[in-house]
Length: 96
Image (cartoon, rainbow, N blue to C red):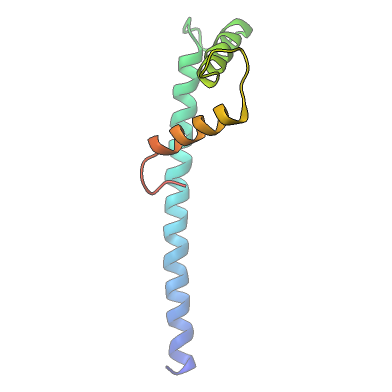
């Protein structure tokens, strides 16, 4: 293929890839924003629009209990790895 055809073709492909990347990034940012809002709402147990220290610590305790799968009061690297695997299984296909 002559260079004068190759370069525009490469630029066209690159532009298409960049457009797709930008769209994917926008969707990812939107999903992160939605998750953050949902997480905030879940932590704000009294619904006053703010997270108090007590609400934060209550959520931290729930998270610790979730991590400490055997209930021994400690979180091991194996328990962290198991959580990571569970999270990966729940992710929608095609997400990073």
